[in-house]
Length: 413
Image 1 (cartoon, one colour):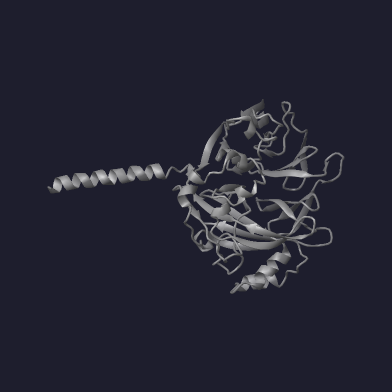
Image 2 (tube, rainbow, N blue to C red):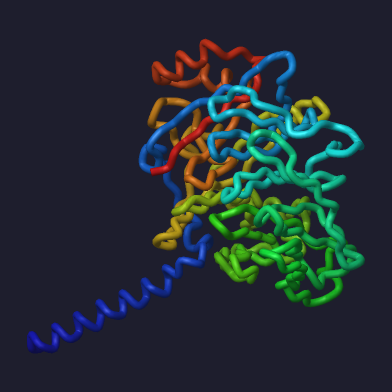
């Protein structure tokens, strides 16, 4: 065969290979099925520039029981203390600034917070309480009190987040009514907005219908709001034009869970040990990455059990079949993480200061990842660290088990 023919064959093969790679690496597809059976330990130093530990101020008037939600933006920390049922504002260094509102039934008061959200453009904090919606500035002053949104019967609203200071997204659920999933309402400039988003899933038969539509998880990415409904395997985005579009799709392949299991927060025993994969709804997003938690059920490669005190105060055994995943939006690659400490912790191996293993619970608009620990849990973890840095050693000397939680802030590269 001539050199010219060999050259032509070589070019064709290269072209075919590139086309195949282009199909595989669709950057909107999260290739879960393809990643099954793989896994590696990821070092934090490969992704992060710095680590900072922030002990929250503790005194007789500032006691935090359990952080349910947290916002870390614009040199401030906003958190909802689930145990105290109150929202508190701290400076970035952990010093206490102010309480947002107060508990009660009166004007400007609340008894329970359903969700917190933040509007970076105007630096406003949005509280979704069961009584009303409140908008606060970073000085802790309430600027707006908003009545709960009126929805088309029979729909109710579990949670609402702020898109802007005057535009809001509400999740809709109803008993045996599946027409709508979400509602945007408020004002856009001077125009009133009331827009319903239809359900994207098509039910095959009545047996598949849940009593209520499944839960959703919402988070902000730049000027968009992301929405994930587990039964769709799709992350949607609501853009600046208020259009709901597909952002990412989980490709579970042969490991997809049956629809009836995806709709059930506590699937049957066969679901928990089957060779299927689900997604936990704690999804976080930076400029480059999606931080994901998968439930691998019977496919879990590193199952372990630990003891946890439940909300009623009783100790219980918790079995972990989770696998964390890092999805790189720039190349469409999903990396599954092996446990950095076998049968004990999940997330990144902390090779930067020898401190705790890390996985974000919040990602700020400027790519700072935040996790938090109770002071007693942090001290317990510290006792088992092999080589903590001098800075970490010094910080721990100022912490007692009864102190308020400690934040771990990791800045991405």
